[in-house]
Length: 502
Image (tube, rainbow, N blue to C red; front, side, top):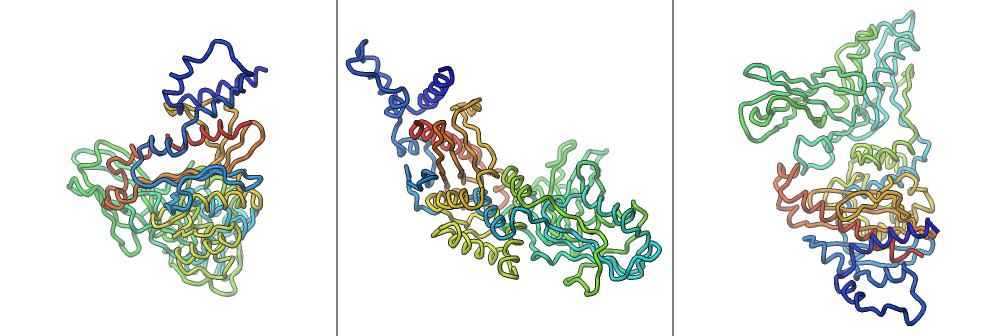
């Protein structure tokens, strides 16, 4: 009995945020004694719920909104609003990418980073070249590179390399960034290659020193912070723009406005030359193990006749995808998507070509009819998905690929954005946010065992399109739009928790 009362109390609390004032006013004039058997509390609450269109109108979101919710078991569409309107999915697209990778590569797939040699190890010496060969691992960090360098000395017994230090990142196409329309300094839009490090970000830190600043660029991890030269920073006496970037050949050349620095601070900047960045860090850490390597040389193909002397494996793909969906890491989505395309088609020419391959797969395996993604992360705002297609994909992937278990729990909140603890309705979903774009898609578990799949997308594309490139890091009005969109999403979840419960 206690559990039932608690459930009804929560449902009542949720519904109260959405009930029209007139409904409460009318209830004050109800007779003191019921003239017929009292309705269940849930049914009364359902009768108070405003129409879906009213909820959306009350949100007062500029632009367009697309919504659909369906029963997972039967596929029956329960409610929708403009379900065929194609809008940018933002990072909700990562749920499709996760399914693509699971289906093509398998949940137990491991990325491999290898150290190869063109000659055997003889008395600690390699009379030939050493090759650092990436396998597209998006999770490789400085600690992992340090472990590879240590194994090179302790397990392979290498103390000297007489030949060249070669670096291969050709497992994936070399990309300068994911989306060319992003500001140059945002860390979520890095370069990509078959050899990546620290999500292809470099740590920039500054501290005032007299009339100037001491600045460092390092490849820090949980335990290490080697300084690097692959990315260089210069402080310039200006106020705007805050950052500039130039391709310096072998380097990423950055400048920062002195007027924007203040006393001290730090931030992550994107790496545009990831293979060089990883190679320099490996060279530094190999030296700390007594192995002196020559200046790194990038190569397009791995020489024939090489032998692997150290192989580093990533965590299983299922774990990588779980973390990708939790932390919404763009580089992870792009690397697993590109790797899946390479495995599926034998080659991958570009990010757009890979996205097209994934779109074709989604039509075939998930039953989507109008999916049009331009990348695997959702960062590009020309991607389009409808709520109907997303719900259809989620239901298919729930049954065939077990995507639900990888999605992050999404707590229900009240109107003040406070989490409703011990709520009987649970939600597992993927969020998506761009400037003036917001999405949410996933699954709702109701107390009676009913399982729903839902998707909601909103976008004010005219306002987004009017932003300058530099405004996109923190645009005026962006936060207000995001808060309003998230409140609408919570009201929709609350509605469905009441309307389809019991």
